[in-house]
Amino acid sequence: MPVAVRVIPCLDVDAGRVVKGVRFADLRDAGDPVELARAYGKAGADELTFLDITASVHGRETTYDVVRRTAETVFIPLTVGGGVRSVADVDGLLRAGADKVGVNTAAVARPELIGEIAERFGRQVLVLSLDVRRAEGTDSGFEVTTHGGRQGTGIDAVEWAARAARDGAGELLVNSMDADGTTDGFDVELIEAVRAVVDVPVIASGGAGKVADFPAAVAAGADAVLAASVFHFGTLTIGEVKGALDDAGYPVRL
Amino acid sequence: MTANVVVADYGSGNLRSVERAVARTGAKVTVTGSLTAAREADGLVVPGVGAYAACMAGIEELGFGPVIAERVAAGAPVLGICVGMQILFETGEEHGVVTKGLGLLPGTVSRLETALLPTVRVPHMGWNTVERDADFGLFDGIAADERFYFVHSYAAPPEVPGAQTATTVHGGRFLAAVRKGALSAAQFHPEKSGDAGAALLANWVGEIS
Image (tube, rainbow over all chains, first blue to last red; front, top):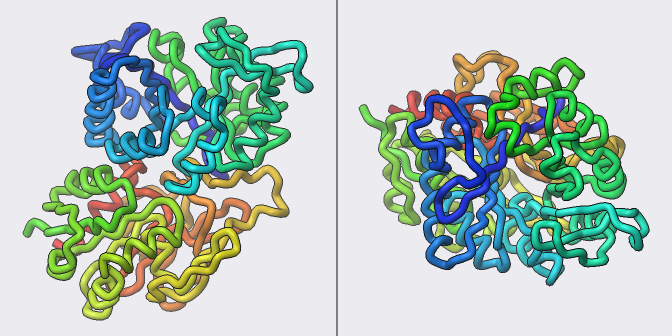
């Protein structure tokens, strides 16, 4: 049987606390990322992603501590992204216990960073994250954005994806800013467009609202599916998503 | 008896995860670059992530190569993980560069064979099943359809003469785990493979206790 489609919950972490609110039964403290990570691990998550939205240096230290404690208690892969700007940042997160590191804005500003990280740690640690919106003026019709989708770069997202994979990204996290938060489903056209130009794994992100959205993303070429609010608010369970993927004929880890 | 396990610290690998996952089995675990500790331990774990050449350079710089070879010759258990398994083979080929390995297992580690199958992604990243020999004790009590977490672009040949093996298909078939005498190794990451990985590590620790 082929490699399973991964289902990945994503937690926004600010100075050691989960933000955006999580409604989970049976938790003493729904703001503790370690406790949530453990709960998601038990619920069948195939990987976990922490997005560190902390701005302060002091807060970053707290993040390292969260990563450390998570790696000590949860035995599935952990990706940490947010604010990663250098090889040294990657080193710090890997030492703390992250298995993979997500890089976004810093690679847009300085694409050489991709090769530097891949050369030092191997491409398997580098998840290149793209925040994409539909925009006129690019060949593919998709543009890379920064600052949470508010700032356009004029860079063609599909060309950028191809370049990143060529330069050393081991995986691409393709996040649709148009779909993000809508719960109307993943942007399957975006996933198809990226899939057509890379042979590294692609993670679909942004827009998940119902179980049927997940097999649709995989049909478009995603190897993994990432979601935040539908899991946090209990709209969907990881088991339900895997059930839908299984029913659609895709391999999952049950 | 509580098993005394050393995790070789030669500058590569997710040492903390390996340490915690092995400790969870009840073993006493020390992460160290000390060759004396590595010689004397009941079990030695050789982790490894990243490039083959970089891992071999680290192994050689700290002098772990001869220690691993001595242990295996003397029947003292060794467990290689991911690139820590790959370096047990004779050679590794990455980006056209050939690196000499420890040569404890025959063959060359090379890029996953996917050219004929454009739908197969590289790196091979995620949870996959393994097909194992019936008498491969490391998998005792683990369901045949259980999945383990893989992340790699290179792999060892699926057949190892005189050894128990487990294999996985991703593009081509490759070696997922091997057991030959005192030497055990896995291409996947038991320390990241949830309950299935914990069961495998417990089997290994159980044997050396």
